Image (cartoon, rainbow, N blue to C red; front, side, top):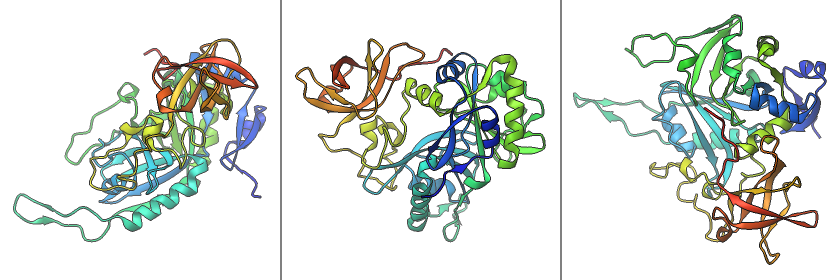
Length: 398
């Protein structure tokens, strides 16, 4: 059995007293002290996560956008420069291989960020798509000539080992970033012929990406996250990660910033109703079952999984459940109807630190999925009443 890999920040985590776990083949910090304190810090101030275990793929070339339209479920060729989009890697039979975020840095330059545990599966899926991809037909210009590009002009490069990723999340995250010494913002990406324009963090909208410089190192600031809070993720070289980690904690101390581990990250994403691969998403789940039908651009001429994304008529669907009291359903617990018949199964559950009552995501029979449906969770032999509710459980104040 292979030992788990370490991120570039392992010594920082050890010095801070972190407890570790094997997650997706990586040795990751679960907590530094209190799960609850770290969770609340992200909701009320800011938390700093090491997510360098994530996988990154650089997709470049004149056909990069068209290739991603073919390789992934969403439409990416029409993305504006400096924007990001949530997408899915699908198997030919429509099952979900992984959920990813795609960032467009230039006309012919995209970054795909995937889950650590699915690194190999996504690498294989992109390679297979590259092998079967047919570039679009040449366009005819105004003078009647063809804008022809011979062959397939797209390159997929696995840059995971050359990348570190930090997540700065919480209502004070942008203030911490603005207070960070040595961070200089680069000019935003623009199309040829556009005039350069200055920008600030106020211009960095949600699901955007901008280049910057930190202490002489190029970094990318991604206005995305996995907590339901405002914040950014910062992509940079591994050898610069420790310096940035230290600098962020120092700059964030007056704002209440704390390092946070996977335990807090999990309860934060659950409150925000965000799926976790291996729990809500897997190869046997179709996008519509998980409430992700909107992600699939079915009007595209061709893409991996096209025509196979609709689940069977009797397939269970993902719902959000709320309960009273303190006993929470956990992954694998059965969901019952009033007669005691099993009608579903919990995929993720916890006593919500923010809301103070149990919450859960579960796959249930379609006729048990309408909002307001009363069900029960089998919690170690006790039937705990639960009600189907509209996700997410928590929405940040804007």
